[in-house]
Length: 231
Image (cartoon, rainbow, N blue to C red):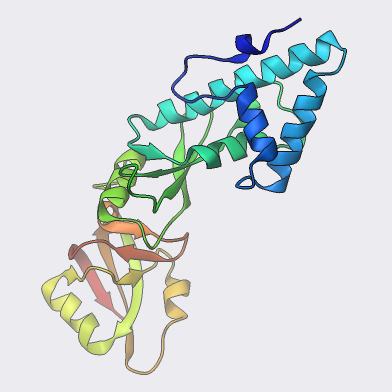
């Protein structure tokens, strides 16, 4: 018989039989994760050695997957552990390999007292990409995420549509003020075009931007820009 204590480990991220128990009864988890936890627990207690073995393997691999994702991010000051557990338990079919758990979204911030997290999608091959922005994220968290993604000094062309006076000031000073929304997509910025608004484009460092969504980006500092054009 497989003893429950053998399902425990010494890894940085803990995923064990108690995790399943907590998820089964915890209201903070979504229905799918709770139901899958119940399913795994029921399987474990069935009089079937192969089922017990498969659940033990699942627990080991889930913990391995969580730790691999975190290790790929490097030194993370804070991550939402409950969300990670929920992700590992939200499956259609029970994963049979560590790779099957990927890609894994990890929600991170600059510290445990900074709970306005940003989601990063971590792939099995080590690729990392923005998954979900947060307009309440602190500058420290945004800078941390940009470092993880390796985009701090990379420059991109963005588009914006703002009042005429502001746009001409941006062209003159080559500075975009902190908190201004821009977009990597021209057609999205054009959607805000209206009376006393000018469409413009410029080149900006990714490290000066918070990606609130795929199309809505916001400056996190008074950002220096180049190649300013007004249309």
